[in-house]
Image (cartoon, rainbow, N blue to C red):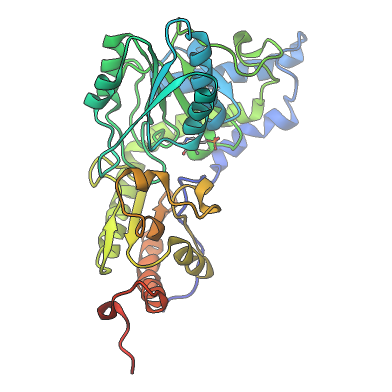
Length: 395
Ligand SMILES: *Cc1c(COP(=O)(O)O)cnc(C)c1O
Protein backbone atom coordinates (compact mmCIF):
# COMPACT_ATOMS: atom_id res chain seq x y z
CA UNK A 1 0.00 0.00 0.00
CA UNK A 2 1.47 3.34 -0.97
CA UNK A 3 1.77 6.13 1.55
CA UNK A 4 -1.13 8.45 2.30
CA UNK A 5 -1.09 11.55 0.14
CA UNK A 6 -3.32 14.55 -0.51
CA UNK A 7 -5.31 14.17 -3.70
CA UNK A 8 -7.67 16.98 -4.69
CA UNK A 9 -10.39 15.62 -6.95
CA UNK A 10 -13.12 18.20 -6.49
CA UNK A 11 -12.33 20.74 -9.21
CA UNK A 12 -16.02 21.09 -10.08
CA UNK A 13 -16.55 22.55 -6.59
CA UNK A 14 -13.67 24.98 -6.91
CA UNK A 15 -10.12 25.22 -8.26
CA UNK A 16 -6.83 26.55 -6.93
CA UNK A 17 -6.24 30.16 -7.95
CA UNK A 18 -3.32 29.94 -10.38
CA UNK A 19 -0.13 31.63 -9.11
CA UNK A 20 0.07 33.80 -12.26
CA UNK A 21 -3.49 34.92 -11.60
CA UNK A 22 -2.62 35.81 -8.01
CA UNK A 23 0.40 37.82 -9.24
CA UNK A 24 -1.81 39.72 -11.67
CA UNK A 25 -4.30 40.51 -8.90
CA UNK A 26 -1.98 41.64 -6.10
CA UNK A 27 -1.08 45.15 -7.36
CA UNK A 28 -4.79 46.01 -7.47
CA UNK A 29 -5.03 45.52 -3.72
CA UNK A 30 -1.72 47.07 -2.68
CA UNK A 31 -0.63 49.66 -5.23
CA UNK A 32 -3.57 50.55 -7.47
CA UNK A 33 -6.26 50.42 -4.80
CA UNK A 34 -8.20 53.46 -6.00
CA UNK A 35 -11.95 53.39 -6.56
CA UNK A 36 -12.40 53.12 -10.33
CA UNK A 37 -15.32 55.56 -10.20
CA UNK A 38 -13.27 58.41 -8.72
CA UNK A 39 -12.31 61.30 -10.96
CA UNK A 40 -8.63 61.79 -10.10
CA UNK A 41 -5.72 60.32 -12.06
CA UNK A 42 -5.06 57.76 -9.33
CA UNK A 43 -8.21 55.83 -10.26
CA UNK A 44 -7.21 55.58 -13.92
CA UNK A 45 -5.14 52.41 -13.47
CA UNK A 46 -7.94 50.29 -11.84
CA UNK A 47 -10.42 51.61 -14.43
CA UNK A 48 -8.10 50.56 -17.24
CA UNK A 49 -7.56 47.14 -15.65
CA UNK A 50 -11.32 46.45 -15.53
CA UNK A 51 -11.69 47.33 -19.20
CA UNK A 52 -8.77 45.07 -20.06
CA UNK A 53 -10.41 42.18 -18.17
CA UNK A 54 -13.65 42.88 -20.05
CA UNK A 55 -11.75 42.48 -23.32
CA UNK A 56 -10.19 39.23 -22.12
CA UNK A 57 -13.63 37.78 -21.33
CA UNK A 58 -15.08 39.04 -24.63
CA UNK A 59 -12.24 37.42 -26.54
CA UNK A 60 -12.74 34.11 -24.71
CA UNK A 61 -16.47 33.80 -25.50
CA UNK A 62 -16.70 35.69 -28.79
CA UNK A 63 -18.70 38.77 -27.79
CA UNK A 64 -18.10 42.52 -27.61
CA UNK A 65 -16.47 43.90 -24.44
CA UNK A 66 -19.48 46.15 -23.78
CA UNK A 67 -21.67 43.03 -23.54
CA UNK A 68 -19.75 41.76 -20.47
CA UNK A 69 -20.99 42.69 -16.96
CA UNK A 70 -19.01 41.74 -13.87
CA UNK A 71 -20.89 40.22 -10.92
CA UNK A 72 -20.12 38.52 -7.63
CA UNK A 73 -20.11 35.03 -9.18
CA UNK A 74 -22.06 32.36 -10.99
CA UNK A 75 -25.04 32.45 -8.63
CA UNK A 76 -25.57 36.19 -9.05
CA UNK A 77 -25.22 35.92 -12.83
CA UNK A 78 -27.85 33.16 -13.00
CA UNK A 79 -30.22 35.09 -10.73
CA UNK A 80 -29.78 38.26 -12.75
CA UNK A 81 -30.36 36.53 -16.08
CA UNK A 82 -33.52 34.75 -14.98
CA UNK A 83 -35.19 37.39 -12.80
CA UNK A 84 -33.98 40.22 -15.01
CA UNK A 85 -35.45 38.73 -18.19
CA UNK A 86 -38.65 37.70 -16.42
CA UNK A 87 -39.43 41.16 -15.06
CA UNK A 88 -38.41 43.09 -18.19
CA UNK A 89 -40.48 40.94 -20.56
CA UNK A 90 -43.58 39.99 -18.58
CA UNK A 91 -45.82 42.03 -20.88
CA UNK A 92 -44.90 39.65 -23.69
CA UNK A 93 -45.46 36.57 -21.52
CA UNK A 94 -44.75 34.85 -18.24
CA UNK A 95 -43.51 31.45 -19.40
CA UNK A 96 -39.93 30.21 -18.87
CA UNK A 97 -38.36 26.93 -19.99
CA UNK A 98 -35.46 25.30 -18.18
CA UNK A 99 -34.29 21.75 -17.46
CA UNK A 100 -34.69 19.55 -14.41
CA UNK A 101 -30.90 19.15 -13.96
CA UNK A 102 -29.89 22.80 -13.64
CA UNK A 103 -27.74 24.11 -10.80
CA UNK A 104 -29.79 25.37 -7.85
CA UNK A 105 -28.74 28.93 -8.81
CA UNK A 106 -31.11 28.47 -11.79
CA UNK A 107 -33.74 26.14 -10.31
CA UNK A 108 -34.43 28.20 -7.17
CA UNK A 109 -34.88 31.56 -8.94
CA UNK A 110 -37.25 29.80 -11.35
CA UNK A 111 -39.22 28.31 -8.46
CA UNK A 112 -39.35 31.73 -6.82
CA UNK A 113 -40.69 33.23 -10.04
CA UNK A 114 -43.52 30.69 -9.92
CA UNK A 115 -44.50 32.21 -6.56
CA UNK A 116 -44.54 35.60 -8.35
CA UNK A 117 -47.04 34.46 -10.98
CA UNK A 118 -44.70 33.12 -13.67
CA UNK A 119 -44.99 29.66 -15.19
CA UNK A 120 -41.93 27.44 -15.56
CA UNK A 121 -41.53 24.24 -17.61
CA UNK A 122 -38.79 21.98 -16.24
CA UNK A 123 -37.84 19.80 -19.20
CA UNK A 124 -36.98 16.15 -18.56
CA UNK A 125 -33.63 14.68 -19.61
CA UNK A 126 -32.67 11.25 -20.93
CA UNK A 127 -30.72 8.65 -18.94
CA UNK A 128 -27.46 10.48 -19.73
CA UNK A 129 -28.76 13.85 -18.59
CA UNK A 130 -29.23 15.17 -22.13
CA UNK A 131 -31.87 17.77 -22.92
CA UNK A 132 -33.26 17.14 -26.39
CA UNK A 133 -33.49 20.19 -28.70
CA UNK A 134 -36.83 18.81 -29.92
CA UNK A 135 -38.24 18.97 -26.40
CA UNK A 136 -37.18 22.62 -26.19
CA UNK A 137 -38.84 23.37 -29.54
CA UNK A 138 -41.99 21.53 -28.41
CA UNK A 139 -42.21 23.49 -25.15
CA UNK A 140 -41.94 27.00 -26.65
CA UNK A 141 -45.28 28.84 -26.65
CA UNK A 142 -46.40 32.32 -27.69
CA UNK A 143 -45.92 33.54 -24.12
CA UNK A 144 -42.43 32.00 -23.64
CA UNK A 145 -39.85 34.69 -22.86
CA UNK A 146 -36.77 32.70 -21.85
CA UNK A 147 -35.08 29.34 -22.30
CA UNK A 148 -32.30 28.60 -19.77
CA UNK A 149 -30.31 25.40 -20.31
CA UNK A 150 -26.91 24.80 -18.75
CA UNK A 151 -23.87 24.31 -21.00
CA UNK A 152 -22.47 21.40 -19.00
CA UNK A 153 -23.76 19.74 -15.85
CA UNK A 154 -21.77 20.14 -12.65
CA UNK A 155 -22.63 16.71 -11.21
CA UNK A 156 -22.47 14.30 -14.13
CA UNK A 157 -20.49 16.35 -16.67
CA UNK A 158 -22.93 15.96 -19.55
CA UNK A 159 -22.45 18.62 -22.24
CA UNK A 160 -25.77 19.84 -23.62
CA UNK A 161 -26.53 20.51 -27.34
CA UNK A 162 -26.23 24.27 -26.83
CA UNK A 163 -25.78 25.33 -30.48
CA UNK A 164 -28.89 23.39 -31.54
CA UNK A 165 -30.97 24.86 -28.72
CA UNK A 166 -29.60 28.33 -29.52
CA UNK A 167 -30.67 28.01 -33.15
CA UNK A 168 -34.20 27.01 -32.12
CA UNK A 169 -34.51 29.95 -29.70
CA UNK A 170 -33.28 32.37 -32.32
CA UNK A 171 -35.75 31.09 -34.89
CA UNK A 172 -38.64 31.33 -32.42
CA UNK A 173 -37.62 34.73 -31.07
CA UNK A 174 -37.07 33.61 -27.47
CA UNK A 175 -34.11 34.71 -25.33
CA UNK A 176 -31.59 31.94 -24.59
CA UNK A 177 -29.53 31.90 -21.40
CA UNK A 178 -26.92 29.29 -20.56
CA UNK A 179 -25.14 28.64 -17.28
CA UNK A 180 -21.64 27.96 -18.64
CA UNK A 181 -19.92 27.93 -15.24
CA UNK A 182 -18.63 24.37 -15.68
CA UNK A 183 -17.89 24.67 -19.40
CA UNK A 184 -15.39 27.54 -19.46
CA UNK A 185 -11.89 26.17 -20.00
CA UNK A 186 -13.21 22.75 -21.02
CA UNK A 187 -15.43 23.41 -24.05
CA UNK A 188 -14.92 26.03 -26.79
CA UNK A 189 -17.62 28.71 -26.48
CA UNK A 190 -18.79 31.23 -29.05
CA UNK A 191 -21.93 33.13 -28.13
CA UNK A 192 -22.48 34.29 -31.72
CA UNK A 193 -22.25 31.00 -33.60
CA UNK A 194 -24.15 29.29 -30.75
CA UNK A 195 -26.88 31.98 -30.66
CA UNK A 196 -26.56 32.55 -26.93
CA UNK A 197 -28.17 35.77 -25.62
CA UNK A 198 -27.04 35.52 -21.98
CA UNK A 199 -24.23 33.45 -20.45
CA UNK A 200 -23.10 33.04 -16.83
CA UNK A 201 -19.55 32.24 -15.78
CA UNK A 202 -17.61 32.20 -12.52
CA UNK A 203 -13.92 32.87 -11.86
CA UNK A 204 -13.22 30.19 -9.27
CA UNK A 205 -14.19 27.29 -11.54
CA UNK A 206 -11.26 27.96 -13.92
CA UNK A 207 -8.37 28.80 -11.57
CA UNK A 208 -9.52 32.38 -10.96
CA UNK A 209 -10.63 33.94 -7.66
CA UNK A 210 -13.87 33.22 -5.79
CA UNK A 211 -16.65 35.78 -5.49
CA UNK A 212 -16.35 37.19 -9.00
CA UNK A 213 -18.11 36.21 -12.19
CA UNK A 214 -19.83 37.78 -15.11
CA UNK A 215 -22.97 37.80 -17.14
CA UNK A 216 -22.74 38.25 -20.89
CA UNK A 217 -25.80 40.11 -22.15
CA UNK A 218 -26.21 40.45 -25.92
CA UNK A 219 -26.78 44.07 -26.87
CA UNK A 220 -30.47 45.08 -27.17
CA UNK A 221 -31.62 42.25 -24.86
CA UNK A 222 -34.31 43.65 -22.53
CA UNK A 223 -33.32 42.93 -18.95
CA UNK A 224 -34.07 44.50 -15.55
CA UNK A 225 -31.35 45.32 -13.07
CA UNK A 226 -30.83 42.97 -10.10
CA UNK A 227 -28.51 45.05 -7.89
CA UNK A 228 -29.63 48.68 -7.62
CA UNK A 229 -27.41 51.49 -6.32
CA UNK A 230 -24.51 53.33 -7.90
CA UNK A 231 -23.94 53.67 -11.61
CA UNK A 232 -21.23 51.04 -12.09
CA UNK A 233 -21.14 48.60 -15.03
CA UNK A 234 -22.80 51.10 -17.37
CA UNK A 235 -25.58 51.67 -14.80
CA UNK A 236 -26.69 48.03 -14.91
CA UNK A 237 -24.99 46.46 -11.87
CA UNK A 238 -24.37 48.64 -8.84
CA UNK A 239 -21.51 48.28 -6.37
CA UNK A 240 -17.86 49.29 -6.28
CA UNK A 241 -16.06 46.91 -8.59
CA UNK A 242 -14.06 44.02 -7.11
CA UNK A 243 -11.07 45.29 -9.06
CA UNK A 244 -8.50 42.65 -8.10
CA UNK A 245 -11.08 39.90 -8.55
CA UNK A 246 -12.06 41.20 -11.98
CA UNK A 247 -8.39 41.39 -12.97
CA UNK A 248 -7.98 37.80 -11.74
CA UNK A 249 -11.02 36.59 -13.66
CA UNK A 250 -9.73 38.22 -16.86
CA UNK A 251 -6.28 36.75 -16.44
CA UNK A 252 -7.68 33.31 -15.55
CA UNK A 253 -10.07 33.09 -18.51
CA UNK A 254 -7.38 34.14 -20.97
CA UNK A 255 -5.08 31.50 -19.52
CA UNK A 256 -7.77 28.78 -19.36
CA UNK A 257 -8.73 29.19 -23.00
CA UNK A 258 -5.08 29.29 -24.12
CA UNK A 259 -4.11 26.06 -22.33
CA UNK A 260 -7.43 24.31 -23.04
CA UNK A 261 -6.45 22.12 -26.03
CA UNK A 262 -3.44 20.74 -24.21
CA UNK A 263 -4.90 20.48 -20.72
CA UNK A 264 -8.11 18.87 -22.00
CA UNK A 265 -6.16 16.12 -23.75
CA UNK A 266 -4.09 15.41 -20.67
CA UNK A 267 -7.01 15.51 -18.23
CA UNK A 268 -9.22 13.38 -20.44
CA UNK A 269 -6.58 10.67 -20.70
CA UNK A 270 -6.35 10.49 -16.91
CA UNK A 271 -10.14 10.62 -16.60
CA UNK A 272 -10.60 7.68 -18.95
CA UNK A 273 -8.04 5.66 -17.06
CA UNK A 274 -9.82 6.38 -13.79
CA UNK A 275 -13.23 5.49 -15.24
CA UNK A 276 -11.92 2.28 -16.74
CA UNK A 277 -10.29 1.24 -13.48
CA UNK A 278 -13.31 2.05 -11.32
CA UNK A 279 -15.73 0.21 -13.60
CA UNK A 280 -13.84 -3.03 -12.90
CA UNK A 281 -15.45 -2.88 -9.43
CA UNK A 282 -18.54 -5.12 -9.67
CA UNK A 283 -21.95 -3.41 -9.72
CA UNK A 284 -20.58 0.03 -10.63
CA UNK A 285 -21.94 2.27 -13.39
CA UNK A 286 -20.91 5.54 -15.00
CA UNK A 287 -23.40 8.40 -14.66
CA UNK A 288 -23.71 11.04 -17.37
CA UNK A 289 -22.98 10.82 -21.06
CA UNK A 290 -20.09 8.52 -22.05
CA UNK A 291 -18.97 10.81 -24.93
CA UNK A 292 -20.58 14.27 -24.62
CA UNK A 293 -18.95 14.77 -21.27
CA UNK A 294 -16.62 17.26 -19.58
CA UNK A 295 -13.00 16.16 -19.87
CA UNK A 296 -12.57 16.26 -16.09
CA UNK A 297 -15.73 14.59 -14.78
CA UNK A 298 -16.06 11.11 -13.32
CA UNK A 299 -19.37 10.22 -11.66
CA UNK A 300 -19.90 6.61 -10.70
CA UNK A 301 -22.53 4.68 -8.80
CA UNK A 302 -21.47 1.85 -6.54
CA UNK A 303 -24.57 -0.14 -5.81
CA UNK A 304 -25.62 -1.12 -2.25
CA UNK A 305 -23.60 1.60 -0.44
CA UNK A 306 -23.85 5.30 0.44
CA UNK A 307 -21.80 7.93 -1.39
CA UNK A 308 -21.35 9.86 1.85
CA UNK A 309 -19.68 6.87 3.53
CA UNK A 310 -17.30 6.53 0.58
CA UNK A 311 -16.41 10.21 1.02
CA UNK A 312 -15.58 9.72 4.70
CA UNK A 313 -13.20 6.87 3.94
CA UNK A 314 -11.66 8.75 1.01
CA UNK A 315 -11.18 11.74 3.27
CA UNK A 316 -9.39 9.57 5.84
CA UNK A 317 -7.07 8.57 3.02
CA UNK A 318 -6.44 12.17 1.96
CA UNK A 319 -8.73 12.26 -1.07
CA UNK A 320 -11.06 15.25 -1.46
CA UNK A 321 -14.10 14.27 -3.54
CA UNK A 322 -17.83 14.84 -3.57
CA UNK A 323 -21.09 12.98 -4.02
CA UNK A 324 -22.83 15.35 -6.36
CA UNK A 325 -22.68 19.07 -6.06
CA UNK A 326 -21.01 20.71 -3.08
CA UNK A 327 -24.36 22.21 -2.18
CA UNK A 328 -26.19 18.90 -1.84
CA UNK A 329 -23.36 17.09 -0.03
CA UNK A 330 -24.36 18.47 3.35
CA UNK A 331 -28.05 17.72 3.00
CA UNK A 332 -28.23 13.96 2.32
CA UNK A 333 -31.06 14.69 -0.11
CA UNK A 334 -30.90 12.46 -3.17
CA UNK A 335 -29.40 14.34 -6.12
CA UNK A 336 -32.07 15.99 -8.29
CA UNK A 337 -29.77 15.42 -11.26
CA UNK A 338 -29.44 11.65 -10.82
CA UNK A 339 -33.13 11.39 -10.00
CA UNK A 340 -33.96 13.24 -13.26
CA UNK A 341 -31.76 10.75 -15.15
CA UNK A 342 -34.12 8.04 -13.92
CA UNK A 343 -31.68 6.43 -11.53
CA UNK A 344 -33.56 4.48 -8.89
CA UNK A 345 -33.88 5.85 -5.38
CA UNK A 346 -31.64 3.11 -3.91
CA UNK A 347 -28.80 4.02 -6.24
CA UNK A 348 -28.78 7.84 -6.19
CA UNK A 349 -27.19 7.65 -2.74
CA UNK A 350 -24.27 5.54 -3.91
CA UNK A 351 -22.75 7.99 -6.34
CA UNK A 352 -19.26 9.45 -6.18
CA UNK A 353 -18.02 12.46 -8.15
CA UNK A 354 -14.31 12.84 -8.83
CA UNK A 355 -13.40 15.94 -10.82
CA UNK A 356 -9.87 16.20 -12.15
CA UNK A 357 -7.86 19.29 -12.97
CA UNK A 358 -4.69 20.56 -14.57
CA UNK A 359 -2.77 19.54 -11.47
CA UNK A 360 -4.02 15.95 -11.38
CA UNK A 361 -1.19 13.46 -11.89
CA UNK A 362 -0.98 9.84 -12.93
CA UNK A 363 0.10 9.03 -9.35
CA UNK A 364 -3.15 10.57 -8.08
CA UNK A 365 -5.15 8.28 -10.38
CA UNK A 366 -3.18 5.20 -9.36
CA UNK A 367 -3.59 6.07 -5.68
CA UNK A 368 -7.39 6.38 -5.98
CA UNK A 369 -7.55 3.14 -7.97
CA UNK A 370 -5.51 1.46 -5.26
CA UNK A 371 -7.63 2.51 -2.28
CA UNK A 372 -11.18 2.75 -3.66
CA UNK A 373 -11.93 -0.95 -4.37
CA UNK A 374 -11.06 -1.77 -0.74
CA UNK A 375 -13.27 1.03 0.56
CA UNK A 376 -16.21 -0.13 -1.55
CA UNK A 377 -15.73 -3.71 -0.32
CA UNK A 378 -15.56 -2.69 3.36
CA UNK A 379 -18.77 -0.69 3.00
CA UNK A 380 -20.51 -3.49 1.13
CA UNK A 381 -19.51 -5.92 3.86
CA UNK A 382 -21.42 -3.84 6.43
CA UNK A 383 -24.34 -2.81 4.20
CA UNK A 384 -27.60 -4.73 4.72
CA UNK A 385 -28.37 -4.27 1.00
CA UNK A 386 -25.35 -6.19 -0.28
CA UNK A 387 -26.17 -9.59 -1.84
CA UNK A 388 -24.25 -12.47 -0.28
CA UNK A 389 -22.12 -13.21 -3.34
CA UNK A 390 -20.57 -9.72 -3.13
CA UNK A 391 -19.53 -10.03 0.51
CA UNK A 392 -15.97 -10.89 1.53
CA UNK A 393 -15.62 -14.58 2.29
CA UNK A 394 -15.31 -15.21 6.04
CA UNK A 395 -12.19 -17.12 7.00
C1 LIG B 1 -20.42 26.58 -9.17
C2 LIG B 1 -21.61 26.72 -10.05
C3 LIG B 1 -22.49 27.82 -9.94
C4 LIG B 1 -22.36 28.85 -8.85
O1 LIG B 1 -21.24 29.67 -9.04
P1 LIG B 1 -20.69 30.52 -7.78
O2 LIG B 1 -19.65 31.40 -8.39
O3 LIG B 1 -20.12 29.53 -6.83
O4 LIG B 1 -21.83 31.28 -7.24
C5 LIG B 1 -23.53 27.90 -10.83
N1 LIG B 1 -23.72 26.99 -11.78
C6 LIG B 1 -22.90 25.93 -11.94
C7 LIG B 1 -23.15 24.95 -13.03
C8 LIG B 1 -21.82 25.75 -11.06
O5 LIG B 1 -21.04 24.69 -11.20
